[in-house]
Length: 157
Ligand SMILES: [Zn+2]
Image 1 (cartoon, rainbow, N blue to C red):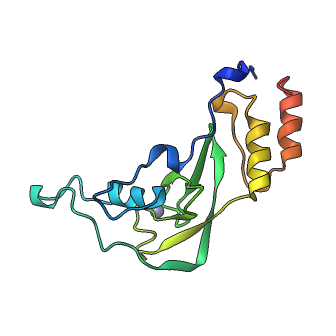
Image 2 (image 1 turned 45 degrees about the horizontal axis):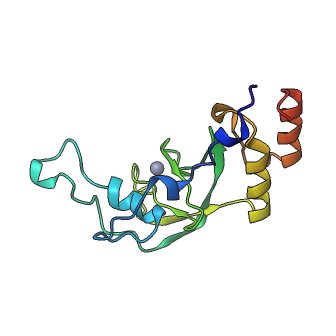
Image 3 (image 1 turned 60 degrees about the vertical axis):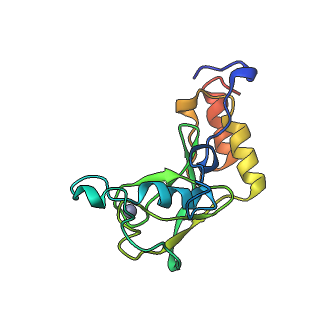
């Protein structure tokens, strides 16, 4: 593991860094901007259907299913819990996701995204910040102490 000089270390990237709501659209948050931007017909449809939303704006929230935010290559991400294989940047501010690939399992519902506590987010990001971006990884259940131990083992403490 190689260390980066402190002033060149990028911050962890999340949905707010990648998905900006269009002021003219229905999205107010980064999680909603994903739906507004990517849940549209693009290929395999007649020209007049391109860019048309694939369904009504999701309004409800799945009551029994959640998804967990995790860090992958310095990015806060969340996987579709319906198993379609899709992932998107996780939003710090709007802790929901709607899978634009499978329409949240065809339910049309938002899925609540679980995050570590704010103190744990800060501790996880601090522990990962000395690593090169590809090595900035964390999964739910992995402790901050484990991250520090990995840093020490790899000479990045
Ligand atoms: Zn999906």
